[in-house]
Image (tube, rainbow, N blue to C red):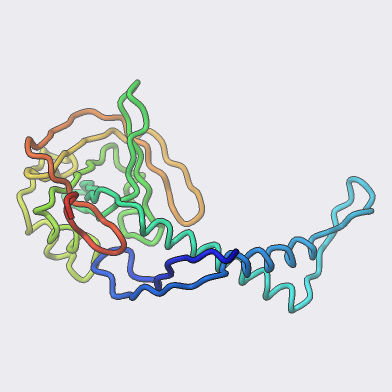
Length: 228
């Protein structure tokens, strides 16, 4: 039985979606067919144990394998667009200069000790230096802070980033957004690389929480409030 899926075209990581949704069916079947072709091309039954076999894919099988991988990535991207995420601005201080980036790949890690993790793309400017800092701050944004989310996700607006909103600084410590939904200052403890991203683990040192709870969320390419 064909399975219907909602398919959306790729959009920027942040900012309003400019894509339109369409309904397509049978895409799982096509993926499965491509996967079976790929797996058959990898079959090496009857080879002596311990031998390393170099596989040569025919052009047709190589194309099918690439299509299967592309479909998987597209489906995963569409799946992640359906998951609402709180929007954060991760900040550091570098030789007197504040730096920050909009991020949704942020998660609590443990309560003993209190800790969290942040995932940052290697192409981001902050990626090159955050690992050299002793501390970083995770500022969970309030619904009112959508302008800040845009500024920190668009390099063309980098000059406006710390000119918007009320930022608090303490010497060389990371900037903290005074009106954030929550601000969490962390000491950097570990860094791990995986694929195109690095995972930075921080141990919590201080927390500030805003009384009214109305976080800014990101869903299907759009910033909005929890209530819609």
